[in-house]
Length: 388
Ligand code: SF4
Image (cartoon, rainbow, N blue to C red; front, top):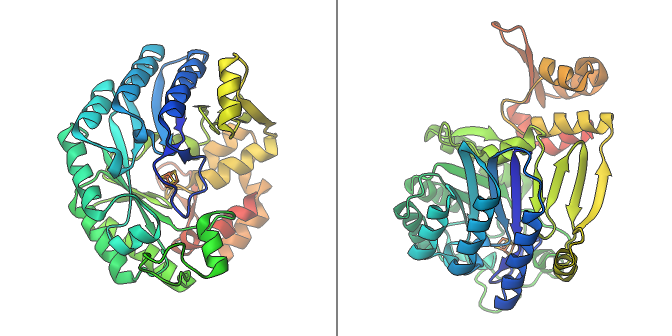
């Protein structure tokens, strides 16, 4: 096990599109949770040192500086880390101050991923984000002053009311802040979220909201926004290395690359997923059940699934295709002891003919890569469905 994910589920306010495992911050619940998390972490066997750590949420930085400090000490005392480890934390701009950022950085966290989403105040307000555009900008400056030299900015496009012009301005502002990493996610409407309710009811939750009738953007506009992001960010020196992710050379998120390479990882905390020894399992999503189980030295794992050989191969293909470089047919065939071009011959032929994927052979190695085309990037879900 070389990668560890830790989930901290607290947020100061719920965003309307959120379907992550998150709950409203409460001092006493946060203290109890951090204690339980330390307990769970103490029980994780340390077979090898960690290459990557990712602390996500929720909003991990909603936790007080004091609690975070004790928690990081526990994590870094318990695990050994590789010399060039990557340790990321997700942050909401509104929950940061110089002291908290210094504490996080000095504890050993060397990458911060800032949930900015937009630099347009109407869009931030629509999404129910708690920070302003100015606060996001200030938080990024503070992170750099605290010593972070690997800062990521997460953005959302396809927000009702958003124009291509406003998306361009958000991207330009983002690049001007000189982050090392940028993620651009299409707004998705998950069943049961407040956004889902709004779109069904066609009304806003409060009179103050500036965008009075939320209407989803057209598919054409979404594609235009996505393609503009690729064009603009690559023209600014970012490497487009995964469907939604861009990085300065050498700053690709190694923790997420491990997921797309179908590497093993272990997850700790509420709702956290793990993948070990060919088995996927995940902790309970119920905060009360999580606290009770961990306090009673019982497992918080609620579900587990053995992955069959066929599923393993299909996972490796559709996860690997998320990377712009795609998958190497020969090495994947060796790893899964199967001839991929025979096993998935008809799917590969059909998708190639539709212009969604392409096979390329390197002149030096005579090995073949399979990757999404530009059209396939836009229609990636259609491609993945063929391999599931
Ligand atoms: S900050 Fe993230 S996890 Fe928290 S409510 Fe908003 S989208 Fe959900």
